[in-house]
Image (tube, rainbow over all chains, first blue to last red; front, side, top):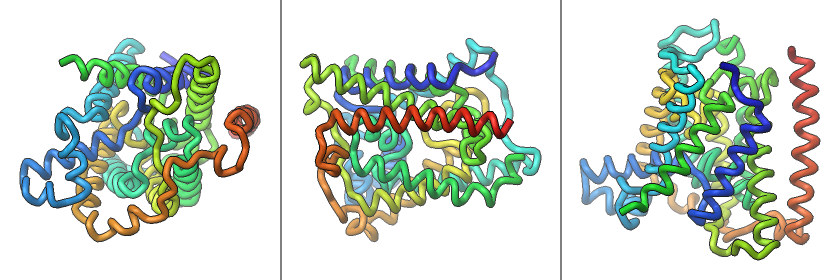
Length: 167
Length: 180
């Protein structure tokens, strides 16, 4: 089945974001779920170290702890919603999205490395395309717009180097 | 008890909207960077404009209190630096954190790899965190907004964002026509 019209999908996404603002008093997010998971993992391995680290400690000291983090529950929902939506549209396929110019192991290495770099950026920026660009963008936050502009600027600088991998 | 129902439900709707738009597909997503397919821009800005106008009119009508919504605080230099690092990783990965979860859930191995990379990246950066704590907390500007930056009423910025988005949509359609 073909994907939906991007403007209609965008309006639907905007209504979900608006619903989060109105009913939860906060916007959407994604990288925060990874931060909560990392904090919980470090705390399970080395509890003393985790509470002494100011980054992990923030996720550990919140009510409910890292494993009941709002964004972690939300991101589990994202996976369920993505799965059900793809299943209903008969789009569930086991595979790897890549260009013809790159083999599967290389594509997976790029995906893992790119994810790692994004993780570092999201820590520094206090969020990602969901928590900063979408959420802070709609709230007209200066830092969020600065994040969005610099993220896409860097993307356009790096992308030409990788162009042949997406052909 | 049922505190998890709200974030779970919001997440399900969020994931479904991303999947419907085709943003679980890294090939479609990276089309944004090669000006082949501008779905990312169209979806993001339709969403931002929709939520922004919703908040603006609901608060204008007195139905919601904007102060009850968590406002992100600005740390300008770290956020610009973080954005540059994030954007480079985004182009390399072909997916962002939210869309990597949708890609993984719809059966794509590259989505799983991006999510694993994100977990590793956040973990390692967290371990190194004490070393750059000073930079992380530098250039703090509080809950700074575009209307405050430009010294204009919020309505003016809301109107300007709508105009920029509409102009961007028209440009995006023209770019896609030329690319096809």
